[in-house]
Amino acid sequence: MLGKLLVTLIVGGIIYFSWRNQQNKNNTTVEQEKNRCLPAPYDQVKPPIKLIFSVALGVIILVTIAWMVYDWKDQRTLLEVQIITSTSAGNHYIGTYQVYKKDLQERGFITKDGQIVRIASNERLEVRQLDAN
Image 1 (cartoon, rainbow, N blue to C red):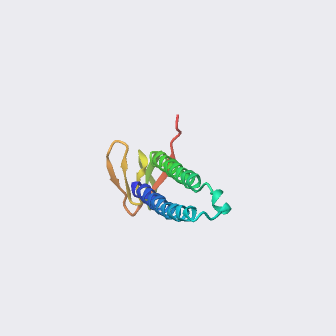
Image 2: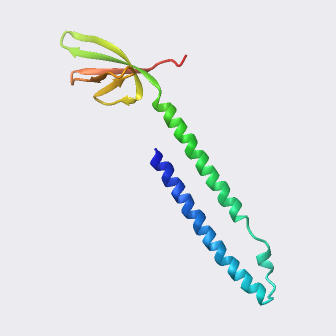
Image 3: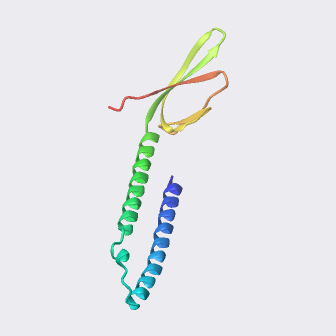
């Protein structure tokens, strides 16, 4: 998750510095044209490139931060996990555990209290979200 943020910042930085380099090149050509005293009305109206890049970079950063907060909150969702063993005589209930969503895996989980639970092939999990009261 931090890697995605760093990649976004690196790409934004590369775009910003390449834009600054291009602006410096354009400024030197504009100065050369002014020294020649040639009228250039098309150069007088400049598009707000800096503003556009700043807004785009700001939006990218805000969306990245919002996504990171949402993902963090989603992974901290508390679930109730029930383990049920299937036998020839019927289903047998083993226990109920509270687990964070980030700690739930296909064949095991880590409880809220830190207990590691592994699931056998003849057992199944029933998972439901706990109410956030």
